[in-house]
Image (cartoon, rainbow, N blue to C red; front, side):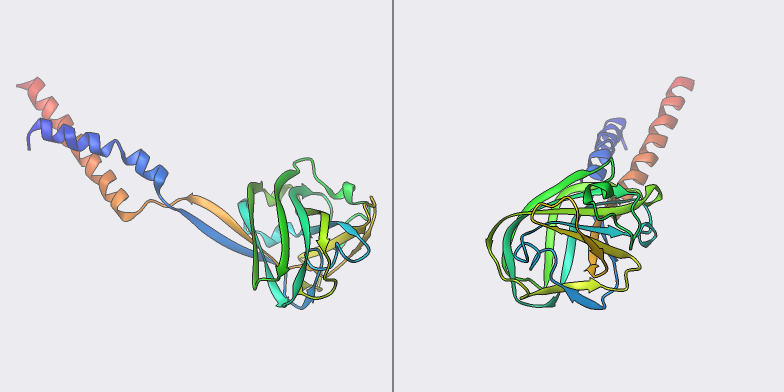
Length: 233
């Protein structure tokens, strides 16, 4: 093979970095919370039940396998029906609050790294899986439990106790608090929603990428030997 041809192949090899950047990301789903009942809070009856305005859930740190960056959460249908039509502002933070021991003053549960996840206008028939995708949040379980904070506003259609999501009443991995009418304090208890977090892992190179990398390394070796031969000639 001529040196010019080798150089062309080497230039092709230098594009491997770009290929790695474009390689598909492997999504990993992690579900937190057992399924032993149903609850309509917060998407189905909190807004229409005495004007509920604040909802929180705490997730046990040890329920996560490690540091997690997620941008999608999912909730699962227990009993179908209509949801309240309202606006839901969701944020996440690391919290020092314990599962089963959220502070009734909801502001005390929010951690210093609180980050806005997204605003969602929901309503109509409850889907079998409610999927919400927003801003990515990086959660390190070694720093504390995970808190989801939901602010509810702009109720346009109330349906009360018409639909339910899968909920965990054992209260081992998740628990909740809720407040009505803009109050700074509320009630706490079990029955928080079973939640799936879709995490974003490192890029996974395809087999063709590995082959190109090996070929490129081989070409580098061949060119280095030819240069050495020319110098010694």
